[in-house]
Amino acid sequence: MLRRAGEEWEAEEQLLRVAWYYYVDQLTQDEIAKRLAVSRPSAGRLLERCRQSGIVSFTIGSDHFDAFKVGRKLKDTFGLREALVPPALDDAALDQAGTNRRLARGGAQYLQNHLKPGDMLAMGWGDTVQATVDHVAVDLMTRVSTVTLTGGVNAYVSTLRRVRGPAAEGCTDAVIPAPIVVSSRELAQALRQEAGVREVIDLSRNADHALVGIGAVTGQATLAQLGYVTDDELAVIAEAGAVGDILGMFYDEQGRIVDLPIHDRRIGIGIDELRAVPNVVGVAGGPNKLRAIRGALRGGYLDVLVTTEEVARALLEAEGVAVD
Image (cartoon, rainbow, N blue to C red; front, side, top):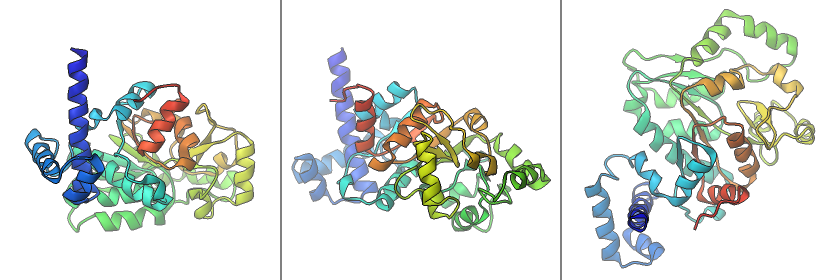
């Protein structure tokens, strides 16, 4: 019985790989055949089976992502609701921007299968989050309300303008009217008391889903790119034991929030408030983010993770879990 179940998983995993390569990565049937070491007619038959089995309709049904062994084990190991792991496609040759774009398509697949008209989507900031929202079908986004999880008006407004049509069927967008990080603790405290800021943060606590990125302390950290911290400040943050951040909140390898002055200057929802959102979706990948993703998982900040196959395998290896 177990052997039969394993064979069924392997068969479904092969179908999912074919579906992803063809419909998301837009490989040709010849390219898919070479990648899977099958004939071109076999690749065509596998694509037809994808359509017949319901794996592919207009989107890849996210329930079928459970067919990936690495995704199943990642979900079980870290107690996630779902783990979406797009099949490896020369990921080592992609730069971080390319990795983010590919993961964004996976994040959009998940959202399209789980967002319902009238839902409220709370959004973090960063390239991956913006790209994910960009890939969600416009007709769905016009039926979903959005709220921001941090300050940073410009980072959010540009995204919402791209994905919103002129008519949003009564749905609303709420943006915290403040920067992500301000110049002093006193200014942050004053801004948090402003009615406009407080109302949006209160609204974000009632979101149905939250979409967040995961930042690394090393490399091209998003906070540094946006000018909120300097490289010298990042070095101090790393020396304090931080390995990554979510929404500008830095944590260590065990997922514990590190006591840092920058936290007193940020504007946005708190980490415990984020955990209380019913469904927190993290989209992140790339070798430089491995420690940051692992810390986020150990901290229990995520319900769903969308990451690369390379990172998923490395996470499992770090936990002593065999995949193959």
